[in-house]
Structure formats: structure tokens, C-alpha cells
Image (cartoon, rainbow, N blue to C red; front, side, top):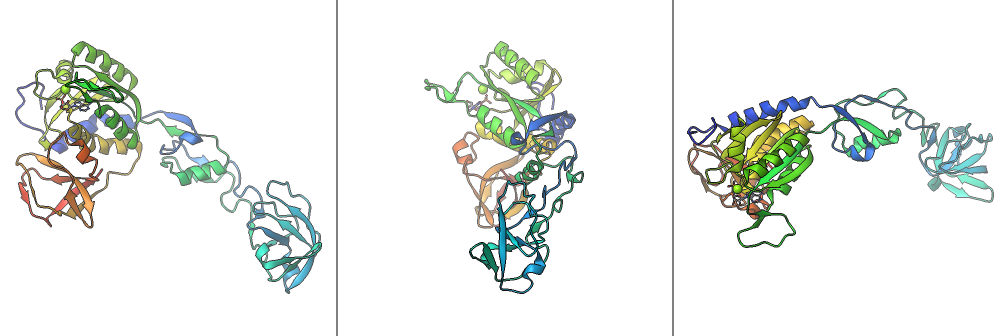
Length: 401
Ligand code: AMP
Ligand code: MG
């Protein structure tokens, strides 16, 4: 693929994705930052974390009940004098007198001298006494300090992608901040004189700018930090200014629109001058693509039709962004078609599909402007370039959206 309209031969999807990955892979080396625990979800832990305290922190009751010595309840029923009550949160230093019981709540310290807890369900309260109806063995319902994790033991390994369960454990040992890898910082730059932001009244010829918000959402959903979402008219000077701002703020920039064969292709015109490569990939939607490096930041240029923009992101950017974020790869599977389809030759097709039963149905016509129909899809159906027709029941590859 070379710059300019002289381009004739189209790149394959793999070739183009390979170039994108080559440009983005250096972003794997990112600095570490400390984030508040409440911001840590979905981030990747940068260092091993050792437990700063034991869990359980101290020996405590696993039940609401009565702390006793097992030998006191060896023969039941037995009535024991009640020596006190320990609630959760109390220091619980008073020892258990021999032959007595102490009422304890779940999470309360076990009084020294007790070795098990009789659940409240197995007791009857008397006047200053408790009758235990079922015996217990030493250790029953006692949660010993350090039996979950011990101070100094490895609690979480570097590289862990932090899910709620990880955050629960890290919070339980009292950590307030965590060292995580900085996310890839991405900027979105949409173009087009016809576009206005949501919340504006449309004048004749205008449409709402959906790609800016949509690409921002796609980036966030795949582990990137969206640092700017900007719009430029089709005026080259304005686009140059917006581009400079975007490359300044971000590790990688995504543009939409202005890369086709129309009269005002501002993205292609400006970026090709800066050494960008613009040309065709043998794919539909998403044929016209651009790749540039501006001030050290890779710039991926997608065509502006909303479905083309989304599909370009899915097939070229999403796999490497997920890898950089430490997220699992996009799930793909082989499923039977529920509809028969026709496909134009020479370009790989990514149709919008919906999983139904154990097959996949078409969710949209072929038009790359059909963004409302795409919202009904949950997969892309990949149809190889040479295939022109498939009967219902044929096995196709689908990419989860
Ligand atoms: P372009 O790639 O600039 O030629 O745009 C192709 C089509 O996509 C045109 O119909 C544009 O109006 C539309 N389009 C371009 N950018 C956006 C955007 N940010 N949001 C919604 N539609 C867009
Ligand atoms: Mg345009």
C-alpha cells in the first residue's frame, strides 16, 4: 500500500493488522502508576503484592453462638454458666472461665481459653445460663488467624488483571492504593463538516457525530484510557491543529472519515503529506485505511461510515489493544449460518450477525451506514474473499462483538 490515488493493489486484512500491531506493540512498555483501590478494577497489577497482615487478622468466631471448651460440651444436653458477651469490634481480651460459656457474635474475637463455638441454633438460653444441646469438637467455627493468608505471603502476582475478587482480597488486607501499569492513552479525532454533537438541533444536511462517542466506548471497553475525543471540520488547517493536540495527549490516535476518494478527504490529504500510508484493504466494510506516525504517535485512520468505523476497530485495533491491556483475546467460534448469503467476490466480508440457538442469523443488510441495525448484532460473521455464496447450515467464523 503506497500513499496517494495511484494505489491499485489492496492489502490483505492480515497484512494491515500486522502493520497496526507493529506500530502499536511498542506501547507494551508503559510506566507504573499508583491508583486508588476504587479505580483499580480492570487494571493490571504491576508488582507482586505480599500480605501486610494475616487473614483472618485475629482468631474469631465463624458463627453467632457460644464460645466454650469442647470438653465442657462433650456430653449433652449440658447447662453452662454464661460468663459474658463479645460483640464484633470488641477487643475480646477477657478469658473464658473454666466450665463456662461466653456469647460471641460472628467476627468477634474468641475469648482466650475457648476452643470452639456452639452455634446459637443448638442452644437454649436460661437465666444466666445456656443449655447446649449438641456437642462440638475443638476448632469448630473458630477462624484461626492467618489461615487464609499469612503476613508476608504472596497475595497477588504481578500481571494480575484486577477483577472484583482480586480487589476484595487486596482491600481485606487494608491496601489503599495499588501499583498498576498505565493504560494505553488513546485519542479520537473525527472529521466532517456535516457532523454536529449530540444535543444540538440538526440543520439541513447535518447529522450527529456518533463515531467519536462510539470509538471512545470501544477503546474504553478494551482497556485503553480515552484522553481526548475531538472533532475537526474538513478544513486542513483545523485538522492539523486538532491532530497536533491529539498526538500530544495520546500514545495512539484514531481518526474517522476523510480517507476515501471524495473531493474533501482531509485526513488522507494532511496525513499523506506527513508520510502516512493510505490505500485499500481487501475487506468490506472498512476498505479505505490509513496508517501514520505523527510526532512519535501512531495514527490509525478509519473510514467514516459508522459501521465501517466500528468494524475497522474490531478487526484491526481491538486484538492488539486487548493484548496491550492484558485482556483475553476476542472470542471467535465456528457456527452454522441460519440464513443463506451472497457475498461479492474479491474482498473479505464482515457481516453483522446475531447468535440464535446454535447458529448465527444476519442482523443487518450490507450497507455500512446501517448503525442501528448493527446494534442488533452480537457478532461479526467473517466470509472469506473468494466465497460468493453460502447455503444455510454452512459453517462460518464469528467474532464476538
Ligand atoms: P467519510 O469517510 O468522511 O467520507 O464519511 C463517510 C460517511 O460517514 C458519510 O456519510 C459521513 O457523513 C459519515 N460519517 C463520517 N464521520 C462520521 C461520524 N463521526 N459520525 C457519524 N457519521 C459519520
Ligand atoms: Mg467526511
